Length: 623
Image (cartoon, rainbow, N blue to C red):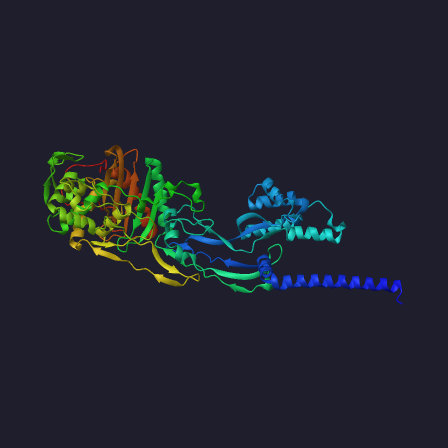
């Protein structure tokens, strides 16, 4: 007979066996759940926590001037982060040594470094372990921050501390503040505002070109991304030994411009002086090589600093040389007279009656600024006679005049590699009125950009060949090897060389004592050019007392090396182009010629010799 004691032991054994079976069954179910049912989800979660893919930014290409001077470059920068759990109560001391280096407010930095204890969704006590302190910190700045942390004095005799405490202070100095492994870069413009409207700028976060060359050549400058597939620890720091892939980025191409930083500096400094003297709304200058179409300088004031474009209003960032258009005024007389000379309808010695300053045509009176009588075609340019140019235009005829306007490139974009270029306004013949043939020759009833005007004058200086304006000389790879080289492009031959030479002869008289721009004359170089004083158009007609004043000239006159355009919008202390813009031309031309080492074509004792007797002096430099 089995005893009651044995029965009790058997029951206990069976109960324990059942418990073990249940436990192992639950454990088995949990293993199946984790290893089979939730396998994919858990693997994905684990990978999300530790497996990371970092895109590797290609270094954006440099922009350099024609002599290799650096105008825009990119530097790799760090995003500085911190683990407040490793800082503990010493967040104030850490903030004190980091704030000056990172250029941050010490109190705000201390607040961000302070550990924040909170409960998570599961009720577990956690603390913030990843805080971004600063973006786009240069490498040298980050190194200085690390050095300061390494020397951090905490007022504690660490020799008397336990091993665990010493480990805490070591981690505080070496691990509490770290750089995010994701690479970033900062666009830098070493010369600040120099050539800002040509260069443009880059978005701070998306690294895309926003204006200027940065925008129009963004694809060339950007390059191709690389990537890195790796593992990270709980603090999101890379475990280099577990790196899987590491594909290098392909850097962007370097862009070499036709701009010369030396000429650009001359232009901007002289333009600033002109703005100080005449206080215009805006002012612009273009310096161009007529033989090639290369732009050596392009400047507009007001200006901006592309390092901090947000500090300037959008209006200051607009490149008025290519984006703005206006009636050109008397500089446009070059077009009608050139066309008439090219058609052999007139010669320089042919004369026109300028009606003593009052010419009734199509029921409207056209006036001159002075009561001129009989003027030769050359004198019409010398004196900038509205009536004389109108009569030349009438003799040339509507069809031919319209063809020459289009032939010189007006009414269409020049093709310069800058965004937002305006095409100007040239009305089709069917929209011309009876009055148009007398007003368009003096630069009314149409609109042009400053760039179109300087390219027109450059065509005359270049023997009648209109060139495409060029700002980019070549592309280079990151090792400086040429990838593409751009040759000068002739758009079309607008004038016969003989007609262009005649026009140059007439334009040389403009800087004579009896011309409208004696202040544009140079001592060592012959100059040819034309003034412009265009009254600004507004609602209801022309605005009294508001003018665009300009001078466009080139030198040496018979073998032009440089063509320079100066435009002032609503200048004060004088408004005629010969008074305001011509002196700026002369100062820029003289300094640029010295800088570039151009060979003079005059000797100091030489004076201007006109081909005709002067009718009247014009010391004020009108029109």
